[in-house]
Length: 447
Image 1 (cartoon, rainbow, N blue to C red):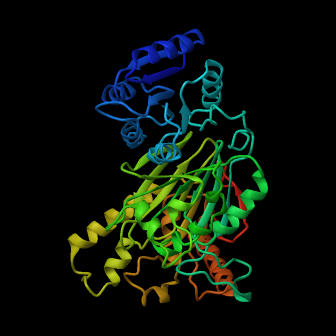
Image 2: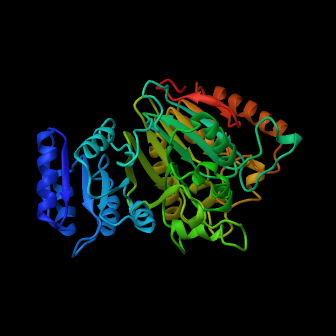
């Protein structure tokens, strides 16, 4: 039986809605204020929370924020905020706080039941507004094959031109379609052509998208201001990342869109964009389990592992192997056994993170000679990417984060050498270089 949690300080309102939902086959749990509502949500893990905006002790905005902070415990809970006040700023702030939709009181029984039916067609799917006619669901059909596509593969800075036309010159951005979700990994300059593609595909249908940011270095966020779906108010974007060393995720993205640098501010983007600073290293996006691991890169940076119904994908665009860095750095001596043991243990942690992945997309910016000149820059060499992937029994490896100085010929030669290395080591892992426009299946056999 589906469960709905009613949080409203008006007893008459609760009784009326509870009667409607009970007759429709819902199990109803009631709370007279936000504090009790939060506790009951964690206890009962309802399919839907129907929460009034204006309440004593803990208002609807606070309920939304606190429940979204508990996403690991409430992965499939949809939050609907209700209010008798029809102010655009209230609607905007509710969505910013983590609500999936905003319903205006009084809510007609038929409208409420229709919205709840749309919500529970698939767990965690966002509903449409009660006052609007039913719209096509934003998620792709469940029968669609799980797949991924590269939109930006370059590191550091975009490098357009004839020498990079084959592999591409846009910075980090990968699209994943899996289990009814559209997940975008990083928002480098490659997110701009992805946005145009989505507009062409969806046309007038609303989009529900999740952007996972590994970190906020410029080559991983610089395309966000040019992401066209973020300018359509019917679209819903959730941006998830980890707080940086100096400021929060939203503050960082706001900063690059200040008037000094960009003509449109983040708050002026009419799309419904919600920012979530992850607190846990594992959470869910729909039915996809997402696991994060901190990588060896300046600042706060993570890699993401997506475990889907048909296969697993690891995205680790910026990472410098610990042991090689420790051995090569002038700040450390190879005669320090404790330091070397620590580095080995950290490399083993990363190998465990990627173990058995069907698809591994990993930082491979340098060859071994180049790396000697870039120790401590936070990037890997191809040799280490291959070794770690083979040890972790990865099925398919994609070399990623191509250096701005590397043209198509350089990348192709590197792939050829990487394949030879795998053969010499007795492996059967498939090795490719990430290439803009390349699309692969996300299956248990490595695609």
